[in-house]
Length: 367
Image: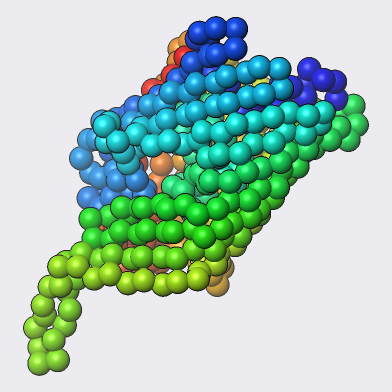
């Protein structure tokens, strides 16, 4: 694979914004955003951090990010700040802030970095960078929206042949805290002690394979609000707040993904397995000029490999401009057990048979 192809492939993993503003020869500013109209036919909230219900929502998917990059020879510094769907406008989050240095086939990074768990992890919040309105929830919500870590990584770019190249990235993370407001009654706080993992990408003409492994050690604080407690003699009492702490926890996650292009068509499949669950999806799409219709099937399994939920999605993306796109989607969720994509227990005909239809119109842009 020639050097220009290698640079193009590696740039995909760093997500360069189209039309970035060059402040100087070494400094550029770029940005991205998404917003939508979304509505379900179930009153219970769908999808962690997005919380779509049966009322029209114009803020469930809203994202806005700014990125500042500095390049000088083989040195790079990058900062990205994002207002995520779960954030208020006055509380954006620092998604990454790192220093990078390149030497021959190696690149070293240190600081706050993106967790490279899945195919779209490096550009997770950039809706313009993927075809569907959202990354597939069965896989990408499996980590509850935790997308970054504090630590360092070392990437080795190895040219296997003229037609393929590999990018191998071991990484190590240190102490970090992630707070997750799962729903109105449940709040998680994960204090990561340290983590380590491996990110492997294999590129070729028209395909990409991605493998990742991560092992994390952490303490967990679970806070429950307004808990109803039954009394021995009958009746119940509501406890305003219950705090449960567990220490020295460990979780491992494995993921495997692939993308294949066949002319104007593309096939994407990806799955993950961890200590608590596993999930998988497959997507097919075909490009007709500015219009790209696509279909996705996703499934979530419990620890015993029994189906918890699955979903079917049909959508189309229309590229209004090179840096502006519109998505229209219909998605059907069916829950077999547990909550599946719901952040609280769904309301259905029976406890074991619940579903929801989700309708979305989304606009994405980059600059």
